[in-house]
Amino acid sequence: MITKEHKEFQERMRLVLAAFAQELPHRINEIESLWQKLRSEWDSKALQEMHRSVHHLVSNGKTFGYPELSIEARALEKILKSMLQVSTPLDDSQSSRILQQIDALKRISIAQESKQTEDAASQAHDENALLPNAQTSSLIYVVEADTEAAQELALQLRYYGYEVEVFNHLDKFRAAVQHRPDAIILMDVEFPEDEMGGILIMEQIQKELEQPARVIFISTHDAMAYRLGAVRAGGVAYFTKPINSTELIDQLDLITASQIQEPFRVLIVDDSQTILAYHATILEQAGMLVKTVVEPLKLLGALNDFNPDLILMDLYMPGCNGVELARVIRQIDGFLSTPIVYLSSENDFNTQAEAMSLCGDDFLVKPIGAGHLVSAVTTRATRARFLRSLMIHDGLTGLLNHTAIKEELAREVIRSSRLSSPLSLAMVDIDFFKKVNDTYGHAAGDRVLKSLARLLKQRLRETDIVGRYGGEEFAVIMNDTDAASAAKVIDEIRTVFSRLLHLSHDEEFSVNFSCGIADLAHFPDAVSLSEAADKALYQAKQRGRNKVIVNAGD
Image 1 (cartoon, rainbow, N blue to C red):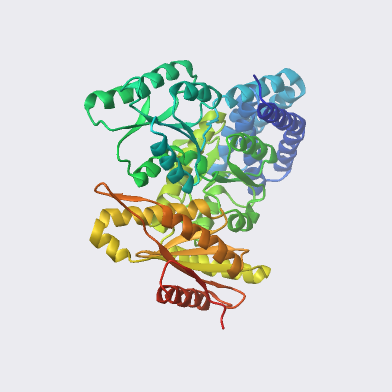
Image 2: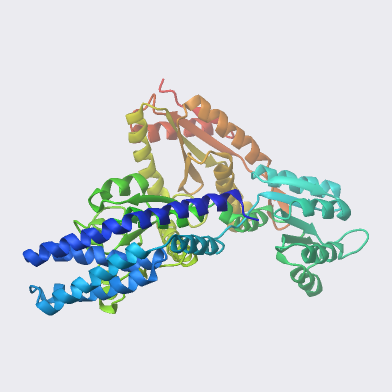
């Protein structure tokens, strides 16, 4: 069944391909005009421009379903390239060969039929089936015969923002999973009717589903027979009771990671509007955010506004080439490590090696299939995000580190001041954290830190910025929020955090935090705002802890 999204994708592709067919005679006329200019007067710049125009036809012909056009353009490009290397005027033999190739391009353009466009559109649609279309869910099915234990587990999961449904009977669960096969299943192994009932029911259900269900097994048994049975029933993880909720949430976060990951941001630079539209359509269909730049000299504004995860850049462009543009990018703070991938029909190994040695990270040869393009961009953008994450994020909690959160605060204060919008800073500190480490051990203390970090991220808005300021202290930047509103939100999180149960050596314990808040309305710069929030935090500690205090500047 063809979905609405596939129909929209196919229609966008049809329009792109139709645009190329409509532009083709004009492109060939431009090449012929440049040729006429060169015949009357030798001009190295005109030769370079002619080579660039022909070069585009080589890759575009293959991309848009004109293989003969690509073959003839390649032959012409070879002649022009040899002339560029020696920088000498045309001789009669070269002139004759160039004229023949231009005539061949004109014949192909005149003889082109609508079938070519239709075939290309069909090919693009077929390739669309290769694009990722993963379905994820944050719905959790807790399947547990013990009603009280199931409800307690569900409560803990809901604190972390998961939607949870509880089933105490296998038959009701089996009916439910048919309607929501994307749900993550927390399945107890033992049931009154069978000590391995959870494993047996999952074996049956997995056979009935098109895609394997994601199931985590929970059991009082740690024997190999149970673990092996769980793996055979499609289990992705296995926990023994009593359950360490922090480790369970870690596992759930891993499973749902693709769901909460922000779309990759790809900046495409190419002087061909048609090629830009073609590649943008493919990447957007794969769920990426795309910005296109058709005039290379206007790149800087797009870089700062869009902040891409990856730059996809044509090698041959007017005004400056891809290598020159890459050098400019590498001299701008913040973009030294941003991957730059050249996209061109250039198949000469030496040219590829030279381009990659000069500020580029990879070289993709046009035409490139939709699936290959998506895969290549995804792989490189994923690696870039991971490396950047290591530099700016705290290793334990995954939040921004001390340096990064301070830089974010400076930027957000400037932005809010410019827009005259409210901004609040909350400083959060775990109460008696040293006592937690001394009593339950540093491993338990680390789990408490991770729990609070996760709770802050899940309970706050996506626009709020959270960082680990140091030790057991966290900073929260809340945009478009005054101090009173920020205090209300943080206090709700404080209440939820105090109800979480942490486990250490089969012993459960709970922890509280204190918080100090200040806003931009009373403290006009990043330094004074940070100092004011710190003072409010100190007051919260002095007044008995486990509370939120606002510094109103009085």
